[in-house]
Figure 1 (cartoon, rainbow, N blue to C red):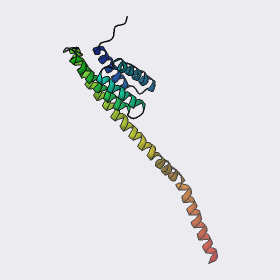
Figure 2 (figure 1 turned 180 degrees about the vertical axis):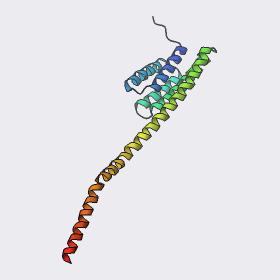
Figure 3 (figure 1 turned 90 degrees about the vertical axis):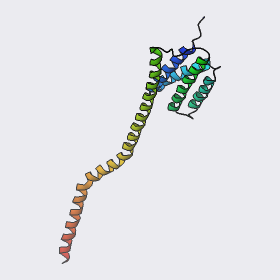
Figure 4 (figure 1 turned 60 degrees about the vertical axis):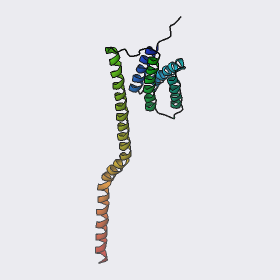
Length: 169
């Protein structure tokens, strides 16, 4: 018979899922991690924090919240799960180098996630600006290309008018 994982093991796996979701843009890979997240939440259904997380996952799938918000809730879920485990007497992060490493890693993953979201947002804004500005550039380039032809037509018209004015006189 398979042994039920401890809260500590779930917390480590949840941290891994969060860091993977922050890094990936592939929808298939994201869906696999979200499926595992859902499985863990179902397995921990007796915990109050798991019930809240399940609600956030449902809101994500109903497109009421975005991936960034879901990841923020996941971070809160991990913190609450650690607190609940510690209140039950289980030490999730031992006061060792490994425990400190996991705390630092959590902070770095959060910072990296914010950086990635902000950089992605800035790149989308730049791309949008280019797309909006491109038609103006195309029309300006076309206008410049047509300038010699317009100048030639104006000169021909002025010359024709000048020659016709001499016939009248």
